[in-house]
Length: 200
Image (tube, rainbow, N blue to C red):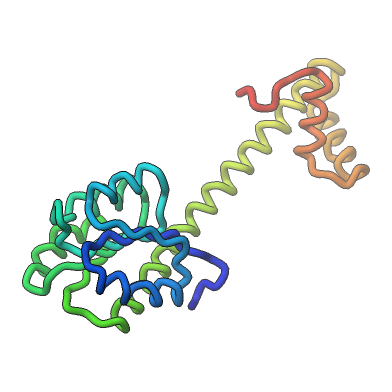
Protein backbone atom coordinates (compact mmCIF):
# COMPACT_ATOMS: atom_id res chain seq x y z
CA UNK A 1 0.00 0.00 0.00
CA UNK A 2 1.25 3.48 -0.86
CA UNK A 3 0.25 5.26 2.34
CA UNK A 4 1.23 2.91 5.13
CA UNK A 5 0.72 5.46 7.91
CA UNK A 6 -2.97 6.15 7.21
CA UNK A 7 -6.09 4.16 7.94
CA UNK A 8 -9.26 4.86 5.98
CA UNK A 9 -12.54 4.74 7.87
CA UNK A 10 -14.89 2.98 5.49
CA UNK A 11 -18.63 2.50 5.04
CA UNK A 12 -19.83 -0.34 2.82
CA UNK A 13 -23.46 -0.14 1.71
CA UNK A 14 -24.46 -3.44 0.14
CA UNK A 15 -27.32 -5.94 0.35
CA UNK A 16 -25.10 -8.67 -1.10
CA UNK A 17 -23.34 -10.94 1.41
CA UNK A 18 -21.18 -12.31 -1.41
CA UNK A 19 -19.91 -8.79 -2.19
CA UNK A 20 -19.18 -8.16 1.50
CA UNK A 21 -17.15 -11.37 1.72
CA UNK A 22 -15.12 -10.42 -1.36
CA UNK A 23 -14.49 -6.92 0.04
CA UNK A 24 -13.35 -7.87 3.55
CA UNK A 25 -9.80 -9.06 2.68
CA UNK A 26 -9.39 -6.28 0.10
CA UNK A 27 -10.30 -3.65 2.69
CA UNK A 28 -7.82 -5.10 5.15
CA UNK A 29 -5.05 -5.19 2.51
CA UNK A 30 -5.72 -1.53 1.63
CA UNK A 31 -5.69 -0.16 5.20
CA UNK A 32 -9.43 0.40 5.41
CA UNK A 33 -10.24 0.39 9.09
CA UNK A 34 -12.57 0.46 10.89
CA UNK A 35 -15.14 -0.80 8.38
CA UNK A 36 -18.91 -0.47 8.85
CA UNK A 37 -21.18 -2.74 6.81
CA UNK A 38 -24.83 -1.82 6.32
CA UNK A 39 -27.51 -3.41 4.16
CA UNK A 40 -29.59 -0.46 2.97
CA UNK A 41 -29.67 3.31 2.46
CA UNK A 42 -31.68 3.96 5.63
CA UNK A 43 -28.95 2.34 7.72
CA UNK A 44 -26.27 4.15 5.69
CA UNK A 45 -27.91 7.51 6.42
CA UNK A 46 -27.85 6.73 10.15
CA UNK A 47 -24.20 5.71 9.91
CA UNK A 48 -23.11 8.98 8.27
CA UNK A 49 -25.01 10.97 10.88
CA UNK A 50 -23.11 9.21 13.65
CA UNK A 51 -19.64 9.02 12.04
CA UNK A 52 -17.43 10.55 9.40
CA UNK A 53 -15.91 8.30 6.77
CA UNK A 54 -12.93 8.51 4.43
CA UNK A 55 -14.43 6.02 1.97
CA UNK A 56 -18.06 5.25 1.17
CA UNK A 57 -18.68 2.32 -1.19
CA UNK A 58 -22.21 1.74 -2.43
CA UNK A 59 -23.03 -1.52 -4.20
CA UNK A 60 -26.32 -0.78 -5.95
CA UNK A 61 -29.15 -1.46 -6.12
CA UNK A 62 -30.13 -1.58 -2.45
CA UNK A 63 -33.30 -3.01 -0.96
CA UNK A 64 -34.84 0.40 -0.25
CA UNK A 65 -33.28 2.79 -2.80
CA UNK A 66 -31.03 2.80 -5.83
CA UNK A 67 -28.45 4.85 -3.90
CA UNK A 68 -27.50 7.63 -6.31
CA UNK A 69 -28.90 10.48 -4.18
CA UNK A 70 -27.22 9.09 -1.06
CA UNK A 71 -23.81 8.84 -2.71
CA UNK A 72 -24.06 12.39 -4.11
CA UNK A 73 -25.15 13.80 -0.74
CA UNK A 74 -22.37 11.91 1.05
CA UNK A 75 -19.67 13.09 -1.32
CA UNK A 76 -20.64 16.68 -0.52
CA UNK A 77 -21.56 16.62 3.17
CA UNK A 78 -19.02 14.02 4.32
CA UNK A 79 -16.16 15.01 2.02
CA UNK A 80 -15.74 11.26 1.66
CA UNK A 81 -14.27 9.54 -1.36
CA UNK A 82 -17.19 7.62 -2.86
CA UNK A 83 -17.30 4.58 -5.11
CA UNK A 84 -20.65 3.75 -6.71
CA UNK A 85 -20.90 0.25 -8.17
CA UNK A 86 -23.69 -0.29 -10.72
CA UNK A 87 -24.77 -2.84 -13.30
CA UNK A 88 -22.88 -2.51 -16.59
CA UNK A 89 -25.96 -1.52 -18.58
CA UNK A 90 -26.50 1.50 -16.28
CA UNK A 91 -22.87 2.49 -15.86
CA UNK A 92 -22.57 5.18 -18.55
CA UNK A 93 -25.79 6.92 -17.50
CA UNK A 94 -24.88 6.88 -13.80
CA UNK A 95 -21.31 7.93 -14.49
CA UNK A 96 -22.56 11.03 -16.33
CA UNK A 97 -24.80 11.94 -13.38
CA UNK A 98 -22.16 11.63 -10.65
CA UNK A 99 -19.01 12.69 -12.51
CA UNK A 100 -19.25 16.37 -11.53
CA UNK A 101 -19.44 15.39 -7.86
CA UNK A 102 -16.10 13.58 -8.05
CA UNK A 103 -17.64 10.16 -7.47
CA UNK A 104 -15.88 7.06 -8.78
CA UNK A 105 -18.07 4.55 -10.63
CA UNK A 106 -17.48 0.92 -11.40
CA UNK A 107 -19.55 -1.42 -13.54
CA UNK A 108 -20.39 -4.93 -12.42
CA UNK A 109 -19.78 -7.76 -12.64
CA UNK A 110 -16.26 -6.89 -11.54
CA UNK A 111 -13.29 -8.69 -10.01
CA UNK A 112 -11.30 -8.55 -6.75
CA UNK A 113 -8.30 -7.14 -8.60
CA UNK A 114 -10.36 -4.27 -10.05
CA UNK A 115 -11.93 -3.57 -6.65
CA UNK A 116 -8.49 -3.55 -5.03
CA UNK A 117 -7.19 -1.13 -7.67
CA UNK A 118 -10.23 1.07 -7.08
CA UNK A 119 -9.40 1.24 -3.37
CA UNK A 120 -5.86 2.31 -4.23
CA UNK A 121 -7.15 5.11 -6.47
CA UNK A 122 -9.51 6.19 -3.69
CA UNK A 123 -6.56 6.32 -1.26
CA UNK A 124 -4.57 8.48 -3.68
CA UNK A 125 -7.53 10.85 -3.98
CA UNK A 126 -8.03 11.00 -0.20
CA UNK A 127 -4.36 11.85 0.33
CA UNK A 128 -4.51 14.55 -2.33
CA UNK A 129 -7.43 16.15 -0.50
CA UNK A 130 -5.55 15.85 2.81
CA UNK A 131 -2.67 18.05 1.56
CA UNK A 132 -4.62 21.31 1.11
CA UNK A 133 -6.55 20.54 4.33
CA UNK A 134 -3.27 20.42 6.27
CA UNK A 135 -1.98 23.56 4.52
CA UNK A 136 -5.13 25.48 5.44
CA UNK A 137 -4.77 24.32 9.04
CA UNK A 138 -1.13 25.44 9.22
CA UNK A 139 -1.99 28.85 7.72
CA UNK A 140 -4.80 29.27 10.25
CA UNK A 141 -2.45 28.30 13.08
CA UNK A 142 0.15 30.79 11.85
CA UNK A 143 -2.44 33.56 11.64
CA UNK A 144 -3.57 32.76 15.19
CA UNK A 145 0.05 32.93 16.41
CA UNK A 146 0.55 36.34 14.75
CA UNK A 147 -2.69 37.59 16.30
CA UNK A 148 -1.62 36.54 19.83
CA UNK A 149 1.89 38.02 19.47
CA UNK A 150 0.46 41.30 18.17
CA UNK A 151 -1.99 41.50 21.07
CA UNK A 152 0.88 40.95 23.52
CA UNK A 153 2.99 43.59 21.78
CA UNK A 154 0.24 46.19 21.97
CA UNK A 155 -0.31 45.33 25.62
CA UNK A 156 3.38 46.02 26.32
CA UNK A 157 3.16 49.26 24.34
CA UNK A 158 0.06 50.36 26.21
CA UNK A 159 1.00 49.19 29.73
CA UNK A 160 4.78 49.63 29.80
CA UNK A 161 5.01 52.45 27.24
CA UNK A 162 7.39 50.45 25.07
CA UNK A 163 7.85 51.33 21.41
CA UNK A 164 6.66 48.73 18.92
CA UNK A 165 10.23 47.67 17.98
CA UNK A 166 11.11 47.37 21.69
CA UNK A 167 8.04 45.26 22.39
CA UNK A 168 8.89 43.03 19.44
CA UNK A 169 12.52 42.65 20.61
CA UNK A 170 11.37 41.94 24.18
CA UNK A 171 9.15 39.03 23.07
CA UNK A 172 11.85 37.71 20.76
CA UNK A 173 14.57 37.88 23.44
CA UNK A 174 12.37 36.26 26.09
CA UNK A 175 11.64 33.42 23.68
CA UNK A 176 15.35 32.89 22.96
CA UNK A 177 16.39 33.15 26.63
CA UNK A 178 13.73 30.67 27.76
CA UNK A 179 14.00 28.39 24.70
CA UNK A 180 10.29 28.62 24.00
CA UNK A 181 8.25 29.99 21.12
CA UNK A 182 7.28 33.63 20.75
CA UNK A 183 3.67 32.53 20.99
CA UNK A 184 4.29 31.02 24.45
CA UNK A 185 5.89 34.27 25.64
CA UNK A 186 2.99 36.27 24.19
CA UNK A 187 0.44 34.00 25.87
CA UNK A 188 2.30 34.43 29.16
CA UNK A 189 2.15 38.23 28.81
CA UNK A 190 -1.57 38.12 28.09
CA UNK A 191 -2.17 35.86 31.11
CA UNK A 192 -0.20 38.26 33.34
CA UNK A 193 -2.70 40.95 32.45
CA UNK A 194 -5.65 38.51 32.68
CA UNK A 195 -6.35 38.72 28.95
CA UNK A 196 -8.13 35.76 27.37
CA UNK A 197 -5.98 34.49 24.46
CA UNK A 198 -9.11 33.15 22.74
CA UNK A 199 -10.78 36.53 22.65
CA UNK A 200 -10.80 38.08 19.20
